[in-house]
Image (cartoon, rainbow over all chains, first blue to last red):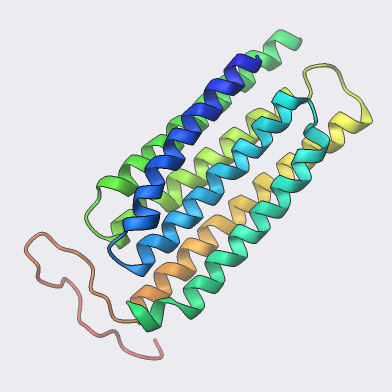
Length: 87
Length: 121
């Protein structure tokens, strides 16, 4: 089962790398904001997979929860302050 | 019992990764950010919730104890939070973009709605 988790983590890392294309080179500010949001979503699952691989899921689940809340608030604040100015 | 839970969680996590991959492909290939948000906002939410459900189920495969039930509840809490928060974040971003006056992409370049939108609607 650990091999399955490592494979899923590698696939998600590949998707994160693909999302970096839009997060860095995206034509507008909004593309970059969406890219950061997508990155955060996949990082959340990768953190849980790391917890299962290292057998410390009781610790990693808290980190993942904090990451989810920070990601949500970050996208809301970016959309409030950055979009109307620089589109 | 343990093998059933393991197989079920493998199926759920694989489905979640499939939806995340579909969302990322749409995010890379679609023409403007309204369509990109359309792809990402739904596929990411569904993929995340499916993956988290599978992981919470796998956490219970060694038998029920207080710690494992608590950790599974926490993982499902992340899932419920993301099920509510992801579409909200997508909607806030889309609304901010719409009110800043950016026209949606069409194939022939002509707008399909009156522009700019009426204020106070």
